[in-house]
Amino acid sequence: MYSGEYNNGKKVGRWVILYKKEEIGGGLYDRSGDEVKVDVWVEIIGSFNSDSKVTCRGEYRNSKKIGRWDIFHKYEGRNQKIGGGSYDEQGDELKIGQWMEISDFFNNFSQVIYNGLYKNGKKVGYWYIWEQSEGNYERIGGGSYEVSGNEFKVGRWVETSNNYSDISQVTYKGEYNNGLKIGGWDIWYKYEGKSTKIGGGQYDESGNEFKLGPWVEISDVFNNFSQVTYNSQYKNDKKVGRWDVWYQQEGKNEKIGGGSYDELGDELKVGQWVEISNNYRDNSQVTYNGEYNNGIKIGQWDIYQRIGFDQPIQKIGGGQYDNVGHGVKFGQWIELHDEFMNTSQVTFNGEYRNNRKVNRWDIFFNSNGENKLIGGGLYDNEEREDLAPGKLGKWIELDYRFNEYQNQIQYDRSFQVTHQGEYKNNKQTDRWDTYFQDRGGSYNENGIKDGQWGLLTTKFSPYKLTLFLGLFTNGEKVGNWILMNIKIEDHYIIFVKIGEKTYENEKQY
Image (cartoon, one colour):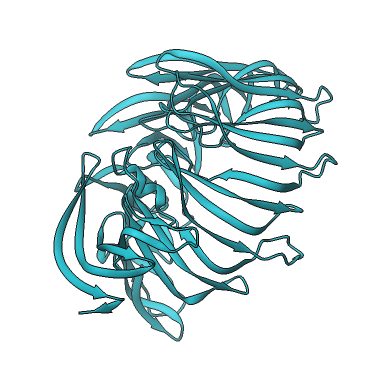
């Protein structure tokens, strides 16, 4: 949040930058009314949050950075200088001389820093890539830029992946010519202190940066808990032929999926495929099995899950696509929550008509093999231009932080936060209640609450767990309702009583 003075709609004078009511930066605007920054400023870098508290400090002249600017990272209570460099004094805001810069994805878990020389605002010569950990620097890569000032990479380089972090220490090694990758490039992965070549392939030598022939590539979210690779074929930078999906866990590497692309270079999937979920990892091993025709899903698609590496694979969902080739869902479907995992096995069961959700959809939560109804509601049957579904009547919906709660507790517990209310014309009405349920609470066939439930306080969050815990009978609160503070220690739930209310037929005494 930014706080300061306006004059005729323009920022003037001192402005401060606040984060959770703490001043973390700011500086001066002159009084001209042109919002010109002057003197010393402290500004935030990137998306300032609890995992990335990065600021820079330096001087402005006529809203242009000049002279020395330093970069700071606040971590574990210490605000440490981790980089910086100089801008020219002429007000062109050109970087000059030696700089230490942070990566675009810098955070507490990915402290990657680049060190090298700027000339007239352009990178030249050799640049080092470092990883910082607890004040120590380890060189993990680097390479050269040409000296002409075009910022073209040349010669041998070792680069970090975009997702490089303490749980995904992946680097790419190969050669550049005039800023384009050529020849063989290898993919390396460091795990438990040991670096291993896990993939790679060939780029053309003509300077088109085309991938050619066989490649072994990593998934976009490759990390210690999701060691997924693709054995692939390229022709003129296009995916062709057979692609296989492999997964490594506990030293074992197995094929878990794959399929074929057309041979014409249109990158269209054809025939039978086994695809992995976007979040495939050790605690969410989900695959989708079905058929493609010219890149479009057709017919029956099934969803499978296994709990662990050596566990059996079970069918948990799926449904039908049309056979015409439009990729339209129809009939009964069982779909997964976007963040489906072993500790939060949530599914949505209902009907599609012309790719739109219609009629009743139920939300189920599977705990220890028991599939419990925890929510749902009705979609209308109106045809809209955008084919978007419209909610109607009473709904019980999951809190958007549902998975955060589940992941904080032991695996055999159910920790459910839901919101209950009504939709009219696809919009929520004023009255919506939020509930907490931990074992015992359930709905009858009419969706009415029975058993032990919790009603959340307005300040409830994953980090401030307070609620009223009590009994519902036929949908009404009865007896003593206790205000509880919840602590989660070593994945166990601990309730601490901090207040009490008594109800009889929903009347408070």
